[in-house]
Length: 96
Image 1 (cartoon, rainbow, N blue to C red):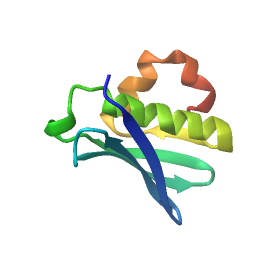
Image 2 (spheres, rainbow, N blue to C red; image 1 turned 30 degrees about the vertical axis):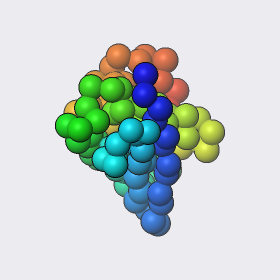
Image 3 (tube, rainbow, N blue to C red; image 1 turned 180 degrees about the vertical axis):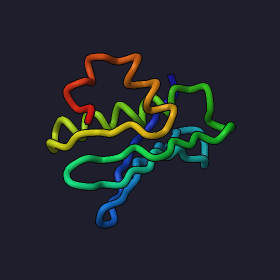
Image 4 (cartoon, rainbow, N blue to C red; image 1 turned 135 degrees about the vertical axis):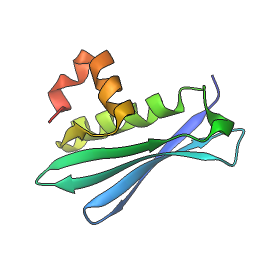
């Protein structure tokens, strides 16, 4: 598996997780907005150039780990995040 580094960027009540793939200049994104301690996962985007490498899954995993560490809940809104939560019932502890 290719190395993927995830960074988090926040600007008030919105933010994004950015996936940096070792062998590419393209980045993947998972955007969110926050209301009352719930982060609404709005959109996941992984360009074709880095598709098929598990990047979207890594973005959601980073958000789940962040939620556990920082005590917020996640409301899946984008179809990818909804499906990821369905596939991982062990994430129920952070699902809003």
